[in-house]
Length: 118
Image (cartoon, rainbow, N blue to C red; front, side, top):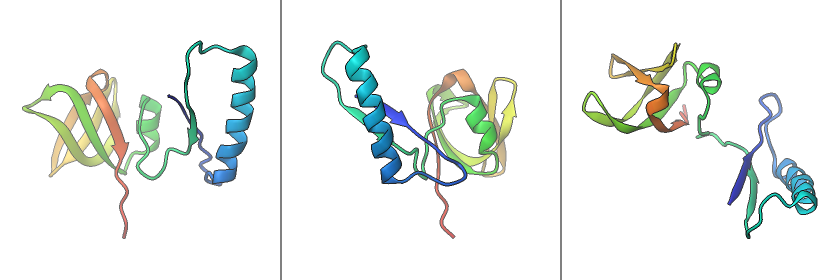
């Protein structure tokens, strides 16, 4: 599976955008042939529950609710869901039930934005 996420913060992403990028990338992959085995190309938007991969993404979503899963337990737990307060050095700051956690970025296995509907 080769999964590409495309994003446009100002205008959003539609199905047409995904189709266009898929056709363009497929053409390049067919010509260049960098993947020797069979694969499926998937192009999509990150969605409302977008995954966070880089520290810059955490900085961009300060003030949003996040769900974070760590590779190893930190203070007795691996899962944290709360308000993303910021980034301090190599740590992601998450507030859970009025307690602030500094989670080492290198220890994060997976993190997503938690959509809030009001």
